[in-house]
Image 1: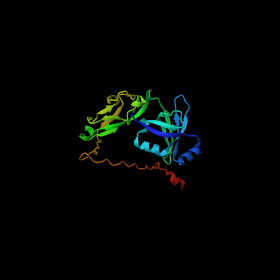
Image 2 (image 1 turned 90 degrees about the vertical axis):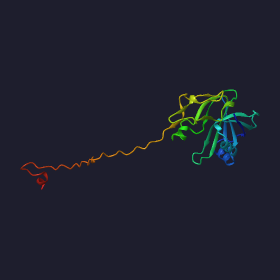
Image 3 (image 1 turned 45 degrees about the vertical axis):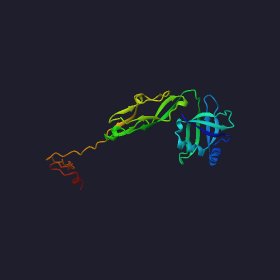
Image 4 (image 1 turned 135 degrees about the horizontal axis):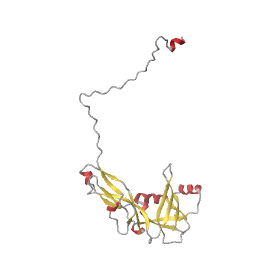
Length: 228
């Protein structure tokens, strides 16, 4: 399991106005949550976090927060809990971290990575359908895999790979339904041919419904005539 170090500072500034000012100076407001302990407000360099996001799948990476002035000089082992973005500008706004123990198992989602080209696609013209893009697993933080690699080379038309078919790394326990489909080879869509007309069969003409005229009774005038 990879671990990356992120330098941070304790944040004294609170409130939306102070947070805006912080972001204008190149920092992001953040909070570290610890089970059974008081949360800690910090600030981190925005540019450094952006670089990390481009290089790593942060949801499955242990981040060692080195916080200036923190009592824990060795750093705090954390996982990213949530990254908040501006809904309009799509800009980074805030980050939440969860402090973890390296000796206690945790539940995390790990990305599924496809390996190889399926026989059902290459030779039979099918298409690979990716049903589950992530799998939930339970393991020690130090055992979190970078991804779950699935080889689809032998997969034929109509076949599927279920959670139970995947070999997980030692110490990593899958939590999804064992029968859940992860990947599937679907048959190509067939175009329906237009129905052929039977020789000699004529198309039925639409029935025209004419308004029924009222016939006056014998010896009597119509209502229109009476009015005149």
